[in-house]
Every structure is written in C-alpha cells, then in structure tokens.
Image 1 (cartoon, rainbow, N blue to C red):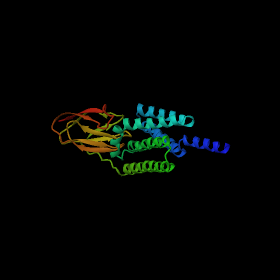
Image 2 (image 1 turned 180 degrees about the horizontal axis):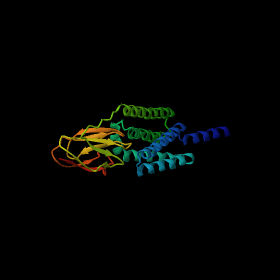
Image 3 (image 1 turned 30 degrees about the vertical axis):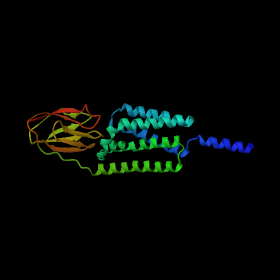
Image 4 (image 1 turned 90 degrees about the vertical axis):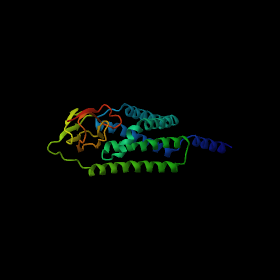
Length: 248
C-alpha cells in the first residue's frame, strides 16, 4: 500500500509539471528574441521603448520560470504575443527588403516570438516533447535562413554612382540632409542612406518612391512638373522624416 501511494504521488507531481522540452525551447527562443530587440535598435542608434520594455518583461519571465513555472510561462507567452501584435505593422514591411540586413533579420524574429507563444502553450498544456524539438529546430532554421538571405542580399545589392549635375541628398540620423532640395524638372537627385536601417525617398502625391537599403546610394530622375512637393520616408515609424522638394 505504501509503494502504491508513493507511485501515485510521483505520477501526480509529473502530471502538474510542464514538460522540460517545452520549457527549454521557451527559454532559448525568448532570450534570442529579447537579444534581437535590444541589439537591433542599438546598432541603428534608435531607442524603441516597446522593445526595451518587452526585453525587460522577458527577463522577468525567465527569472519566474526558475521558481514559479506557470507564472513564468504566462509572462513569456503573453509578452511575445503582445510584441507580435504591436510590432508586426512596423516589422513586416522590412521583410520585403533583405538588403537592409539588420532590419530584415530583426523583422524575421517575429517568427521566433511566434515560436515563444507556441512553446508557452505547449508547456502550459503538457504537450508531447516531440513537438518541442520540432518547434525549436524550425525556429532556429528559419532565423538562420534569414541571416543568410540578408547577408547575401546586402552583398549583391549595388549602389549607383553619382553623375555631374546630380543634386545630392543624404538620409542620415532619420532626417533628410538638406531638408530643402531643389532640382530642375528632368534632373536627377543622388540619394545616399547613411543609416543602418531601411529608408525610402518618397514624394507625396506622386509615383516617385524609392527604397533606400542601409548604406546604399540611389540615383533618381525627377520627371515632375515644376512646383513644391513634400518628401518623406514611407517606412512605418519614420513619419517625422520629411523634407521639401522644389522642382524648377
């Protein structure tokens, strides 16, 4: 009778304990995503409060995971879900521009955050450990592929060369320099991106909108009627990056 009761207690303990495989996957994908959320803004020289807050909550969740597993699982899963919902509108456009390696790879970490949510659900529901292994391999593979694609795209994306008579414009520190640009109709502007982040050179109410990958230079012919136009960066979150284009 004692042996039976002891076996029953052990089985009950295992029944309420989340699977270790899911916990390990949840921990490493959360650490990877938080590291990316801190590293990417640091590299481009921009502070993004939601990402910093998410990284802090991830740290809290990891600490809780060691002693209060269910609470830690909930914190990590909910934090990743909130960051996906709030960050997707800003990150998804960057997936179309792998030549801007930093922003492209950081956007790809949405997949890692999705893996964190899935791992949290798996740990909470005591799902099969086979699923945890597959999820971990898939997340690592997709993130590695994003790094490779970004590096190759950056290496293969050339910059244009300036020509005599070009009007020079620089995108630097999330601003156009100079802010007021003058060019003759049919002339060319030579736009360089000095930042480690994707920008665009877009002209309001026209079809002129050119992506500017990080550290690349683009030559654009301005086939517009004489007048004054607003230039802006169409990347979400860069709304303050504006200027004036005067076509003469």
